[in-house]
Image (tube, rainbow, N blue to C red; front, side, top):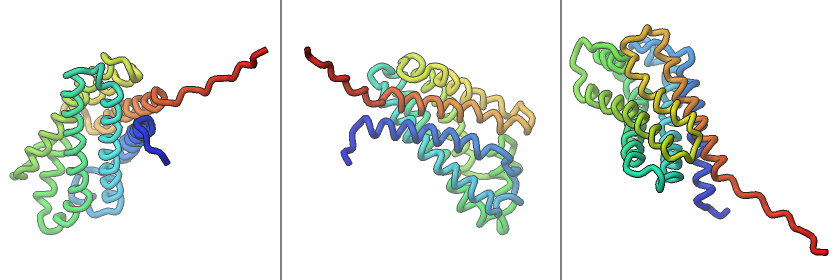
Length: 219
């Protein structure tokens, strides 16, 4: 099989769409973020899926950026770097949540609860060390990166503009999470998931091979 830039770009589009689906799926009936949940199989599966989602999203937004790199300028580069950094940290946090935090639930339940509280936008009772910085970097990269990258995609006008607007609005809206009731926190992630699906599908369509010319009979 010959690997071409078109093939890679279309794969990136599929990756973005699948990431969007996973992002929406893991929010549905999400267990509470407390020490009683971290040892369950469901917790491990959900956070493993979040790791996969972050990897696929990173591949997807890389394909989006390269598809319109000549039209997005410096704004696109800044947005891509911030958003990519956000997803890299999300991947690391999800990995720790899936495979490290459960081993601390019995020996350091207070620390685990504090980490989960900060992850949920609440205040920690104790000191969680560098994890506080990690969560801030994650939030900034996701929020600022999604906003700037969405604006850059909209301005470039290569991919679906409605999805670019939804990406910018959906990621920036997460700033309101601490002010919202708990029942609205998870649904607030849905617009970003839909935006990734829309942008991914648009990326696949814009790189679809051109139809073969129809032969014309010469009389």
